[in-house]
Image (cartoon, rainbow, N blue to C red; front, side):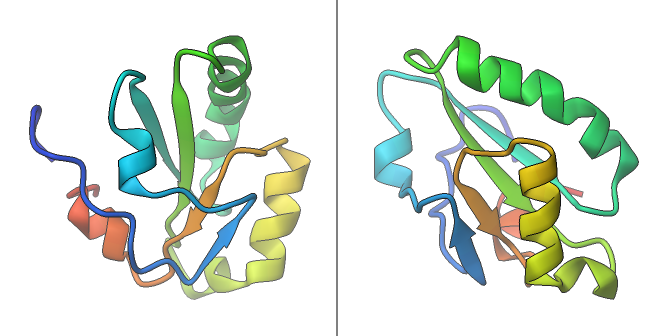
Length: 109
């Protein structure tokens, strides 16, 4: 996604975990951090403490949303996604993007 393009609508989730948010709730005065991750991604797990720190430290100044994008068939297990999210203290809303709809809308590779 190119800079200054409108944020895509948050549609196509297999499920939302930790609550659901809309595009309208995220645009406005506070910037939004969209964190793409996968349960099979080692680097994603390493980055989670920093994302959680931003979420907690700047909770009044920053929106944080996690997007789980599967990298393989093994990453589609919803119970495993919930388990890994709990292990890594992901308490922000999680868009479970099993069909890569939001991933594609953001042009994330």
